[in-house]
Image (cartoon, rainbow, N blue to C red; front, side, top):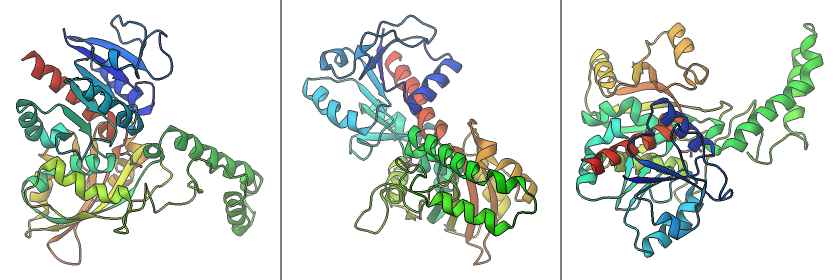
Length: 372
Ligand code: HSE
């Protein structure tokens, strides 16, 4: 029986992965072994089948026994362990939610509803590195891959509204702490309906800029604000997050001639849903009805939201989409700039299709491949 080692399953993405695997009753047909970087020998998690005590995730002799390794531990772990494991002669399947190996020539970025053909080809040609994509890119492609497949995208810009979860669990906690700090300093003013609005505004601004406002993790006030920089700075003037839009989209789709993709990535105060405002230059003028049919036919999760105020506010917001596997896309219309310019707005759960779900599904595909 195939042995699958899980590493980093207690963190945020790993926890969502395990939840999804339990929900889908995925823990069958293979032997799961859980490894830890900190709690060796502690009991393993409850996954509905018996599992041995936690193994040492840094012990190469342990890792050598795994046919498949699924890691949500992060790029630091991957960079440290993967080369040692390969040097020790390991020839198993490496499935990774982190970005470290994403752009390696012998890795595939997995998003099977979008690039199942690329994955199938890779499995049959012996590729063994399957890496989850950047959340923003994966969610954008879940929404509009149909248009790419039809050759309708001349170029695309994505202006993002990214959730705190993308920066990690500590950022989510700090965002809520920031909300709490604002709430507690404004409580008295809010209780008085006749209090001048500028007093309320002043209290919020003072709280946000005070030295005790919690910003240790995020580095700036996010609650009540927006942060137009995500990840490191590149010489091109892009942030690394923006660079990934082009690099990963074209790698996932294996586009022969790369499609230009760029935009500005912004952190906002939502918890775990990324939103994106897209501008797409079409390669030709296509009627909206046809565009919507192409978008909605691309996979089982994308959902068109009618371009009305009511539907948009009801179904096209982080509050409405959190915890759901569906990827709604709405505000679809031709721009007044011209008939080949399309705009749309899409929202997706950053921890599901943006992180854990492609990993859960590639594990099944690899297991099927080995079983077959
Ligand atoms: N880099 C993303 C973000 C999350 O900061 O929101 C992971 O893809």
